[in-house]
Length: 205
Image (cartoon, rainbow, N blue to C red; front, side):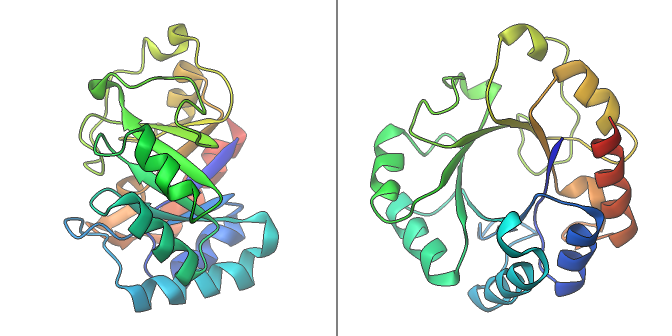
C-alpha cells in the first residue's frame, strides 16, 4: 500500500514519516490552510526529504489557490518531484499549462465535484479522491467507491487516521492512501507517533 503523509512543516515530521516507510510526503502552500508552509519552510522540508528518502520518496507540493503555471514554477524552484493540483479550479487546460513547466502532476478532487474518474483524464500521473471538505478530517461515505470501477494509481484521502485506515482500505480498495489532519495533535501540528502508527496500519492492511 502506497502511503502519503501530507501537510508537513518540520524536519522531525519528515524523518518520522520516512523512517516509518512513507512513500511520499506533501507540503501545503495554500494560503487558507492551517498547514500552509512558507517558501523557506517548504525548501527546508524538501531538502530534508531528499536527504532522508533519496530517489524512492515522492515529494509533493499541494496547491489549490495558485494559477497552475505559477504553481508549477514554484514546484520546480523549490525542488519538489510532484505537483498536486487540488480542487475544481483546475481544469484540463490548467494541467496542460503546468505540464509545460513541470513534469509530474497529480490531480486531487472530490466526488462532490463530479470529476472524471479515469486516472490520467487531465494528463495527471495519479488521482487523489478527497472528502467533500478537503483538509477537514471529516469522514465520508466510502461504501460505494469499490463499485465505481476506479483503477490504476489512485489515492484515498479524507477523514483517515491510524484507527480507521485499515477499514477504509478494505471498503474502498485504493492503490494508496493520503493522510494529513488524521495524524495531528492540533491543526497543522503533526503527531510523530500517530504518523508511525498510521503508516504501519496502512502497510499491514
